[in-house]
Amino acid sequence: MSFRIAVIAVVLAALAGAWWLLQSLGMPADLSPDTLAKWLGSKGSTGPLLLMLLMMIAVVVGPIPTLPVSATAGLAFGILWGTAIAATGALLGALSAFWIARCLGREAICNRFPDNPVLARDGSQRFLTIAVLLTRLIPVFSFALISYAAGVTAIKAWRFAIATLIGMLPMTVVFAGLGNTFKLNPVLTVLAGVAILIVMVWLPWSISRHPGSRLARWLKLNQ
Image (cartoon, rainbow, N blue to C red; front, side, top):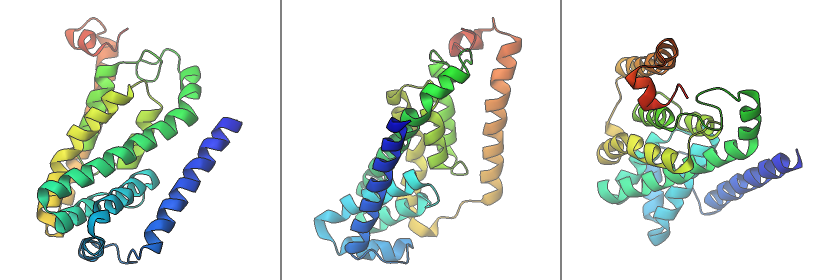
């Protein structure tokens, strides 16, 4: 219990310190891409580091949307550098959330679900990697929530990092390139999200009914 309290205290202190730093450097209250891009451009060589810090806070805290920050990166630093900076900040934030969840909840989940093919210590790495990759592709899923949820599963950190980076790159490039002029179709986004959820629910159920199938053996969900 004392370890968990220490982890929470360190995380809160780090977030508070990072937010204080951004505020002390004059970060505008208006977090629109245009306003943020002008502020970051005025900070010279420290601008990319400040944007990565803002992206990390957005991922770890959750309510702050990450896609507008990606749009800001594109407006401030161009599509190539903007994509690289936004992706780096998002990946660092995702890994931070991942390890917070792993330190706080992984052991309890293992004890509670010792035989679960996803949550157990020897859970399916392939299934979890695919699940993270697919949920990263569709912005309807909370970036922070997926990171925290992955932290309490069996997925290895390097697999989580690779799936996160590959999955988020397409939309990061789009928003960095088109900025705040790009609008997601809400109906198509929700439909894509629902489709992925259906696949994620159906796949384990189907494999549980056919544990000897080729797909079950490949995903290693029947072990």
